[in-house]
Amino acid sequence: MSGAAAHLKIVFSPGRVQLVQDEEEEDMVPAPRVLVTGATGLLGRAVLREFQRAGWSATGTGYRRARPRLLRCDLTDEDAVRGLIQEFKPDVIVHCAAERRPDVVERHTDAAVNLNVHATSTLAKEAALCGCLFIYISTDYVFDGRNPPYGEDDAPNPLNVYGRSKLEGERETLRHCPGAVVLRVPVLFGEVEFVAESAVTSLWLKVESSEDTCTLDHVLQRFPTDVRDVAAVCRKLSQRARQDPSIRGIFHFSAKEQMTKYEMGVAMAQAFHLPSHHLLPLTELPAASAPRPINSQLNCSRLELLDLGVEPRTFSSAIADCLWPFTADKRWRQTVFH
View 1: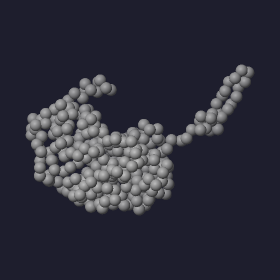
View 2: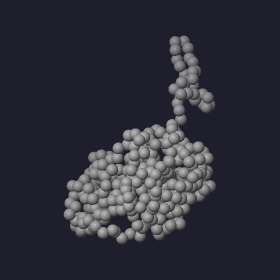
View 3: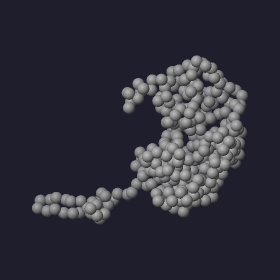
View 4: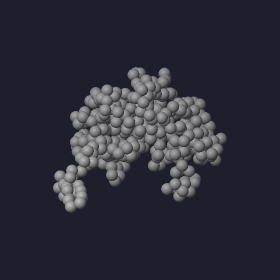
């Protein structure tokens, strides 16, 4: 059947057969196209899923962990990135790919900067050339944590190489693609493939080992945020920004509960009715290769003015959602719910 015939339908009436234009098909608007980088990672998986469920034509990229239905692309290869965007022709790019582990960035600075800065610069240039919306995921670690909460216009002062690389990625984004959106978020957790995939869920290893006492940091203040909520913000920002070009620049999104790692651990134990007496609060700054801000709380008022309707999940319910597959009764749960 030819392309033209595909838009026709057969209508039967008494003594008559007609080929007529299918008005429904004629009126169909192609689904908007979104390209999600880092779609093998914790946030990228959630963002890709959010767009797919909303009916977008969504494609994700990966590299070393690329799997079926994802595009394999080395984002540090400018020609590969250029070819990818020219072929896919996205309406939106959500750039989730990054080296986000501060201690790893300290040890492997060149590779991290290549991904966090140079790859971001290439993507921003190509987004500007193809006229699509570019959303760059950044971090609360661009701030030093000495005077929270931080608004979008407050002066950044990162304490570690990771924060500096993400700040430089922000600047490259807005320099090459002035209509872009920078979305700063705090520490994230969600549906992990292995429990140590997130700095938050990795605490579960200590929570469930109640036979041995262990210490957890009780100094650094964090605002653990579910990736499902960040994904919803990305989608709704995309929809709004495509309609209103004035929506650009820096936005903050964060959950509202302030917690140390010790408080997260206790909350995890409570969520699964486990003991927490073996968890001890460490009230001295933990030793780490990369210094962290004590409290980099984000003021999210600019995003709230858009009234996107995304209310952050509570930590207790969200952490239960993503950790139950790693509990002792996971086989029973999988039998019942799957």
